[in-house]
Image (tube, rainbow, N blue to C red):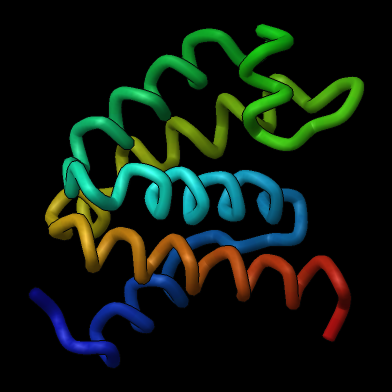
Length: 113
């Protein structure tokens, strides 16, 4: 378990550009939903499924894209999350914290604050 400063450092090191806002929001909400399981592997498996099927209408709906989402953006973000060593080493609570923080950072970038 890392302290808040370390977790914020990890979040700030990730790409939280405005294009990824919905994806980080999905990650934070998904992790909140599976909190009783406390299983990071469930999250990673879900990201892998989405990465392999970025044009699937059900996946787009789950990610919060109404109409069309950019399949290349989705695939890029999923690949980024899967390859990030800092995220892979986190326990469930720390991963949830980082994804929530990234969702906030991304929203700030999206709103131009």
